[in-house]
Length: 166
Image 1 (cartoon, helix red, strand yellow):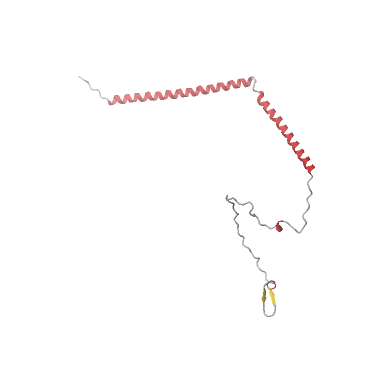
Image 2: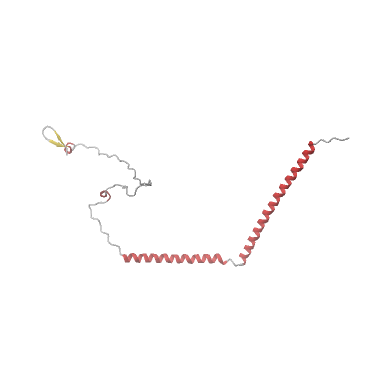
């Protein structure tokens, strides 16, 4: 440690600043840009957070020992869970079968046959209405063309002067 020489004895810097309170030394935080690989992505091996292990864990206490897990107990738990999953899947299958049977049960009944024939009649009615609209639109086009010809004839008669030939 550096020594300061004064008249008769040596004083270290620590002894010199014993009574004074110095402000804590601040170190400027420098943001480090992540290291990029050849594709422009952040490298995986780049250190992300450089917090020392001493700050993360209290190393003054012994690390507690973790017992090895019991494989048989784990296998039993897995079997129990898989049995629960299997039973739920079976219930779901039964519900799906009842839904399908309810949907298909009305296919051959008299009501469904009448409903189907009514649907066919409605589609025929829609086709006839569309055909009727098409015929009326053609009729309107022919009418407007006839009106235009009549107007042209009238205009032509108005412009032509008749002279009596004697």
